[in-house]
Amino acid sequence: MKAKDIELFKNLSQNTYNGIWIDFHNDFDCIKIITNSSLLKVVFREIQVASIINIVFSDILIAKMELFNSGEVEHLTIDNLYRGRVEKNGRLIEIDKNERGYFYLEFYEGQKIEFWSSDLSIKSKNEILCK
Image (cartoon, rainbow, N blue to C red):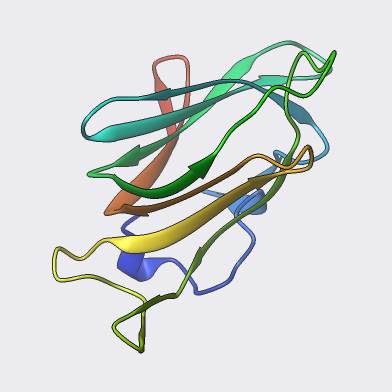
């Protein structure tokens, strides 16, 4: 999904992707977050059947990140994931000059990441569920 095509403020943590309802908040645990210079991959394990699904963001630029240990917590629960706006030079911006949208990824335990990304895809092992 191209960032510019994602509805503004729509909660992507509970959504229908290519006709498949995916509830990352209630049905999955976030077990890992991986990033490099151009990708952000959020790895989820389904609670009931232990299958792995990844949300992969491309062409990223991380603006803010707040990650910390949470006591005995073994995984994180996604609370919110949406494309929003950010203030830059007194103006609210939705899409930057590189056609990246500004995303907010927030976890129930308090961790947060804000970043620019051109698109997102959802993958189950090698199968692309949504792009």
